[in-house]
Image (cartoon, rainbow, N blue to C red; front, top):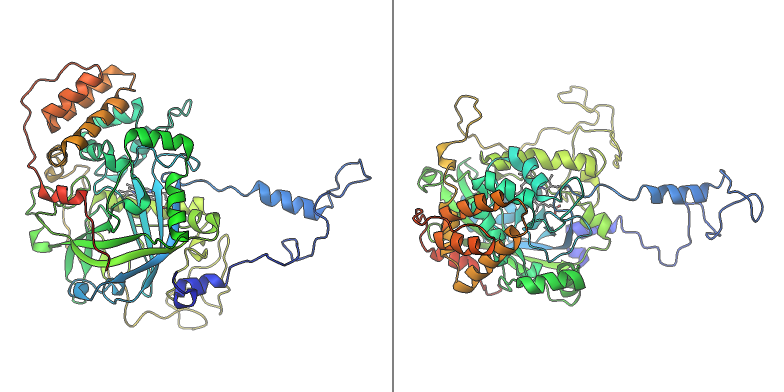
Length: 533
Ligand code: HEM
């Protein structure tokens, strides 16, 4: 276990740790309490008195103990650890020090399922979230990724529709198994851009054996920016040192019944036992001059960059070595946000990313009760914070001075502008008319789904077909089944025929284009057993 004193985040957390051992019970106001079994009443059998401040305070607090669960990714588990870059090889590309300094950077990682509620089972067929908060000296950087490298939709405007379709149906909150119902498959049928991700979702990747054995992906193309202001496109990859391993569907279903905490328990137990989970961070770098060389759009989150086209360069390692001490305070209250970037990392115009950059802060304002949640211990940066933002629910800091505005000539409390180390937005040239129309380069929805299918072994294909049959076979609206099989026929005829036979749909006609090529890159994605550094 890392020594707490060596870790800036844990030194900070030490200040708020509450250890009730060997102390006497008090009220919230610090008044000692000597009796906690009976409320104050008028006579031994009489009514409880309003003046009983202790009982009222205790019950009132209890009444307010629940906060909204996350609107997605409600079910999760997390841990602290550290990230360290192997060397300074990325310094040509970025001023982000945590990627180049070699120093151990404290992190908190939260893994999650997407669709289920807070109390749902771990081993359901679903995407897994893989969100990392790096507490860097330049400020908090959040890499809010998933265990699959692509996403269902291309534009965040569809996210509320997608999530409404994935969640249990609104009239009866059935079914809780998110991938087995009419609304999801209806959405999929209407949105062929989901096809690539649906192949991943029906694959074994959607039932990971352990959080320790999952890959993670930033999904979007981001941008690294160097000291000269030059940008380089980047995709982030986490590869588990333990290798990628999945359950099989029968196991997943049984475990969901017998131990709904299976993945959560596994993460906790391994850290307690000193078997620290470890991942390697890799990057795919693309020079801006090559932006249009790929035949798909780098801004399209339904596409990967095959590793045979752009190799993944290993840049550092992540180790999780400490369980949180309080699930609510830490794992539940942590707030990740794609817009939490540090100097040297910037966005692209990926329309999914742009929507995320709005959504996370917005939802956290309600989930965490107002604009000061970045002061919660788990969210607090270790970097110095000095803003002109004041007041609001839950303000924890006592700001000094009589001014809180910029520009001011009176002094008196306002922070000065940074001389160096400031975040500078990447100066990307943009032009065009305001339109609601996506570029032609986003229109191919099948090629990479075919690529994925072609990269699968026979056993993996059997599992995918079985998953489609199981999930699509639950759909009561037969036309929806037919529509989806029609899309699968665009991906691969054999796949469509095998699924059709299992879900009572007429075999589709042969002869769709075969878009894909067997990709060594995707095969590599399958089993990265890395040597620990
Ligand atoms: C939560 C990943 C797309 C909105 C999360 C979490 C992850 C994640 C990992 C859980 C964070 C945690 O552990 O607290 C992704 C990925 C996406 C994606 C990889 C696509 C590449 C979107 C989009 C939107 C969105 C398009 C909205 C337009 C949200 C919201 C939450 C969330 C509102 C809950 C945040 C909270 O309450 O703290 N997402 N997401 N996500 N995501 Fe996404």
